Length: 482
Ligand code: URP
Ligand code: ZN
Ligand code: ZN
Image 1 (cartoon, rainbow, N blue to C red):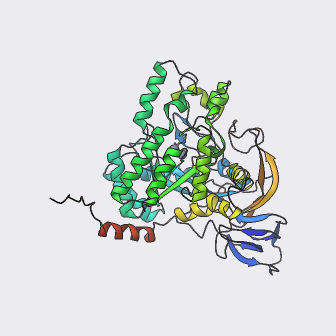
Image 2 (image 1 turned 135 degrees about the vertical axis):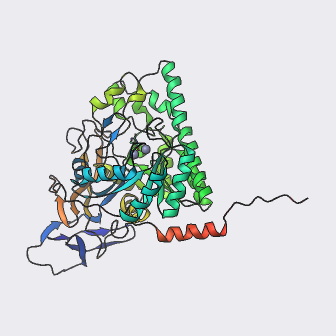
Image 3 (image 1 turned 45 degrees about the horizontal axis):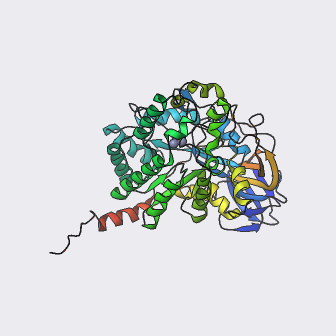
């Protein structure tokens, strides 16, 4: 199949120019004007539109058993919704039960993902520590293209990892050349605060943010970073929501530590007032962790992106229906944690980032696509428009508008955290591996059209890590003279 995207302006993380893009065999074949394409080539009209690398969402949870239920979008419906919003690749999470081997969980997730309509990859969570996990981490990196492992400091009694196990995993990941990613909230602190609140009679959704204030996230972020510093392991902090975490990341980066930070589209635009909505069904719909924060944290997150101290944006797409959230109607700590948004991230960030002048279109491509491709080591195959790259492309109408609603979204849940928001910036067309899969009204991708993307470990970063370790094996303590 051959597709020509004609008449648009190519925008990547570092360039902007007028060109047509010819795609065939899943790859970008030629970029230029007046291209000579084979007879029968399909045409996508990009007149007046921008032609950008498809979005990469590096944090989603499709078809995932979590908090006594299963997330609503499966590996077809979720990525299909993503395609309609201009996202052409997700990196999801394999989350083994603490008594399950990572390789066993990985195989199950691969079976579930076989129906994906667009490309996908996996981080693998480390939820315990033993010899089998030590062994499986090597198998995953060596034979299955996994270059990132996830650590939950939260969710006590479920997938939470203590500091000792985290140290084992960080050291192992570092030695294998893989990146450690971390959910930073201390599960013990959260649990204590939940018990206090419940004892005091706070059972509604407002108890959720009250039990997980910014201090809890900031403390855990700082601790994870310091453990990584001790072990000289590169680290990526997922879903940074507050000033306290951003400060810990910024400080470490200024000290020369290799720390990356992700923030979610929703934390840039939604604040904690949602938990006080008079309709408990609405308030429960926003329960996710870390929670939405007081409004003033939003500008800090934008500054984090503007300054480069946060590099990526994601959704943590974890779609639940109202009936699932109702499981916590008498006890906020039992509300399944998670919100959706894989369909809306690209529009929300364009609207609130580019349309407001906070970021340029090039910076937009960096934080929605190219930086994730670089950090997770699939650049320039993904996240770029260049000859030889995968033909994952969004034709973006920067001036079109749409109003977001659960009534019209493609996501498989009955609640949308952006309900009623009118956004400027819409995916007019999406091309996935060279196929025109979204035409502005209909998804044309079939189950299984997507492929698993292997991500090799990081020779360049880890050469630097190993040089550092060889030069400074221990931190020396200077004794005062005399
Ligand atoms: O509330 C959230 N974020 N749910 C998904 C699991 C996680 O913590 O990432
Ligand atoms: Zn998380
Ligand atoms: Zn998550």
